[in-house]
Each structure stands twice: as C-alpha cells, then as structure tokens.
Length: 332
Image (cartoon, rainbow, N blue to C red):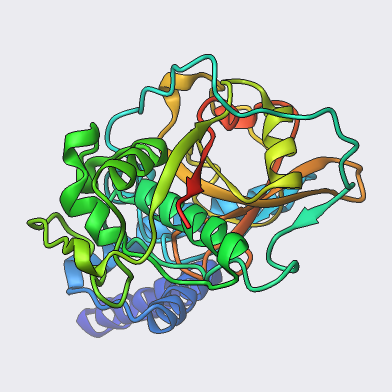
C-alpha cells in the first residue's frame, strides 16, 4: 500500500511537470535569451518578478502585432519594466509647461518637398545617444538640435555636452535629471556664453555640480526661436527650409515598446501640460498609407525603435507634439 502511494505521488509529480504549459518553458527560455542579450542579471526573487513583467509585456507586444496597426511593437531593453518604473527613470518627472502661444518663428507658405531627411542631406546629425536612468531627454533634444544647426551653418558636426546642461542650467527653470525644456536649455547657452563638447564635459547621467569652463565653449547661441503652439505646419516649414526642430510630446505605455512604423495613439493627450518627453524631428515624409509622419531622433540608444529613431503621425498634433517646438540660431 505504502509503495503504491509513493509510486502515485512520484507519478503525479512527473505528470505535473510534464503537463505544465509549454508556454511557461518557452517564456523562461525567451526571458533568459533576452537577459543574455541585454546583459541583465537578477537574484532568484528578482528573476521571477522580472519574468512576470516580461511575460506581461510580451503578451502586450504579441497582442498588438496580431492586430492591424500603423506601427509594430517589439521586445527591447525596457521589456522587464512596468510603465510606472519606466516613467520614473526615463521620462520627465513633472509635465512641462509649454504654454507659450505665440512664437517668433517666421514661416513661409511653401511649397515644401514631399519628404525631408536631414540625415541624408550631409553630415548634419550626430549618432543616437543614450540618456540612461536620468530624465535628461530635454538636454539630448537640445544638443541634438544645436549640433545640427551648427553643422548646417559651419559644416562642422560637433557632439555637444548634455551633462553641462544637467549640471549648470537650473537657473533657467530646468531641473537636471528631473526635467527641463530644450528652449530653456537654449536660453541658458545664450546667456551663459556657450556649450562645451561631449569630449570636454562627458555625460554621467546624474546630477552633479557645474564644471563649465567658458574658455572651452565650442558652440554658441545667438537667439532662441519658438514655434507657435499647435502650429504644426510651421514645424514643417522650419524642418523643410532650415534645420531639425526640437519638440515635446506625451509618452504613454503603448510607446515604450515601439519598434517600427508610424506611431499613433488614442491613449495620449494633445495638451501642453501633458508633455513628458523631448525629442528631435530630423525630417518628415509620407508612408504607403498614405499617412504623413515625422522622422524623430530619440535618446534611448540605438537598440530602441528603428536604430534609435521612430516615426509619429504628422498633421494631427499627435500626443501634443506641436505644443512645444523650438530651435536655436547659432552664433558663428
């Protein structure tokens, strides 16, 4: 009798293990592959917590891609994070006030090219950078724009310092890793007499004391140009005729795992007080839909999205992208 019970018990254990859904084994395998690819290491407790989050995110990705959308999702370096964690580390902690209604950009009526991409016009756009665990997107948006504007004016592409802006621009209503605005970064550069290079003032990804040396300033700002809020056509005018343009928009959880295609959303708002991320429009175009879009340089590294870039629908103030656009005039 005892032997029979033991036999039944052992048999049931094997049956339980055998009958476990293959998806659980597959999820573990995929998660370990993902960990290896992204150099992630956890203790046992954290492993199972991150596995659960990863599995939930993968279900969202698979569910989205099984439907018809204008963009696809994919697993990336953020796939073991909840959106709340992601928002804490990578987005502006407080919505930025982009409430200026009348800008000083002087536009024209066109006509404009059907598509523009400053990456293909010459050596005008630096490689995609990575802000790390710091809400410093506003600095990368600002340096990216100033790098391009300066290169267009001088034919010299110089990588500029985000860390100087994090450390030194608080007097212009910026808060380092807690957030800021590109237009306010340009104001700081204008009145503080220049911005150093990435090489001379390298990125740390955390708030530190200011180490700006005016004698080492490499690029200067003559003035700041703000585009009138909600005037997306003026953004087209600026990008088509002049240079890339910074803008802010609201990131919601359906954007975290963007992979490619033209991003559209019904979750985000289109108001100035919802902006929580700053990026750089380097061009625009029209897809096969045809859906007009912006070509946007992000600051989450080249492994996110499409080599660090994304497309977002143009012409509808998608996620508030037309509420807070600007660019600097270089002093050369």
